[in-house]
Image 1 (cartoon, rainbow, N blue to C red):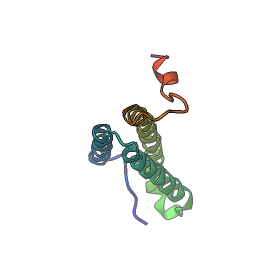
Image 2 (image 1 turned 90 degrees about the vertical axis):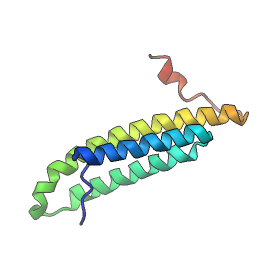
Image 3 (image 1 turned 30 degrees about the vertical axis):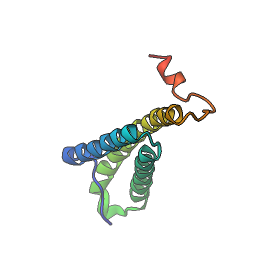
Length: 112
């Protein structure tokens, strides 16, 4: 079973570059589905890492540390993509004059 190792610095930089590109594309096109796709990908990656962590047998003990660290990185990537999704969604609702149910980022910006 292949392991996507997010503890490798090159891999995490590539993931961050891809996420920043999706945030930029979503901001420029004012479409929230672009960062939502990145969010779904990060959640799928989290599920895969959790599945691999609990299913691996004892002969894959070397991967347990890498998978545990990758889970932490997955949660950070999910936080980043979720906040960017909320931000782009707010931009999209203002650009298309849609009535938003609530401003989801008010709770975040009021604390800063």
